[in-house]
Amino acid sequence: MSGTPLHCSAYIDGEFRTGGERRERRNPATGEVVATFDVAGRETVDRAVAAAKRAFADWGRTSGFTRGAMFRRLAEITLGRVDELATCVTLEQGKPLDEARGEVRKFAEAMRFYGEEAERIHGETVPNESTDYLSVVVREPVGPVAAITPWNYPVELIGWKLGGALGAGCTMVIKPSEHTPGAAHLIAGYIGEAGFPPGVFNVVHGAGETGALLAAHPDIAKLGFTGSNRTGQSLFRTVEGVTQLTMELGGSCPMIVSRHADLDLAATGAVRRAFRNAGQICIAINRIYVEDAVLGEFVDRMAELTAALTVTDGFATPDADVGPVTMEEIRARTAAHVADAVERGARLVAGAGEHPAGGLFRNPAIVVGAPHDSLIMTEETFGPAVGIAGVESLDEAVAHANAVAGGLAAYLYTDHLGETMRLGRDLDFGNVAVNSVDAGIINAPYGGRRESGFGSEHGREGLEGYLQYKHLRIRHTH
Ligand code: ADP
Image (cartoon, rainbow, N blue to C red; front, side, top):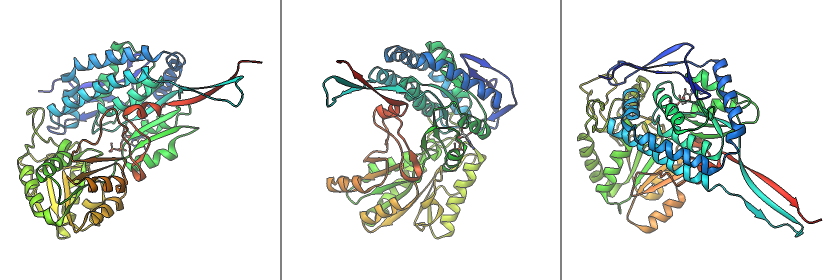
């Protein structure tokens, strides 16, 4: 049904270049080979970085209006190919086709946004003690940059880095996840069609070794990384020379439900943000703290909504709610987190039994009453399982929320203004969403704190991270 596997080769200087060891990617729903890719070794990585460095000489001096026009063309081209790109995402990553289509549209939206932001990059003048001088502060791109991206949002996460970097006037080399090579390959083709000059956007494929070669390259001015905490930590030791870093490392995200919450809204939000993309979201809800007064009612509603989710192959059934998890490691970890909770006395209120299709399909699971130090309440499961605990007060909930490593996103459901303001202040997270589980929008900064990393993507801030200041001090009267 999925046809010939997509072959993904390096994209350097505006051309696809095959060569190197060839690896496969299999569809997590069916096991079929759906893509192959050429692993980039040192020579290919060096060539890609050299191309980005050469291209920077001109691209770094183009006007934001020129870049903006190319971004708008890229957005249009992508919107004309939604199904091509979404099909590739579903076949490699497993999320249902309609959800993948949504991801592609968000990529196009990010391209439109950064096309406009590119036109708004401006500096300022600063007064001097003497009127014979004028200080002009301009912002210039940092240089050729690298991006290492994960597999859970293979299109969108390329978009955030590509939008910020190329919008600012940087050139880039990107290494997508080895589990989802196709999106970067297709996007490279669209970039060429949109008229971005050769060398401005380059792609190298491979796993961690290729990522490490790229990160260690001395000509890379900045590295934008999204992925696991473990890899993020290792990259601090890998980079060589003076390389700026942005790190988006995920984390265990809490949700707090007050006795003043609209429980239908809260349960619907919880199901969406715990199980969408099979829970494989950096900002997925991992643990829910509910005031004791409404715990029973909230659990019942959430269990009912979860039991009604359609879990199936999202290519055959585009409007399925949940597809397979992307790889065996996720399936095993999710099962281990649920088993640990149950062994330690938690109640399984959804997700009992095996999914009939087996393999990487899993019924979304809810466990209630797991100890606060259990795996599900402390670690990022990154799969379709969530823990719920009752709390006596919102202060207790905030203490638990902040006590676990990671500070990416927190969710609060309450209709009480005082609680909104107090918890909005006290939750130590980069994103706090109230009465909604859409924590990120394209025009506001998105990023973590503490163990979840640093630096922002999205918004004007996502572009500013790729700019540096220059102070031009002019003595104009002498
Ligand atoms: P996740 O499983 O959340 O995607 P990983 O950190 O394993 O997180 O992978 C994120 C990205 O980092 C992928 O593109 C992967 O190939 C890359 N990567 C993994 N290990 C390394 C490493 N040691 N150095 C550089 N990049 C790496």
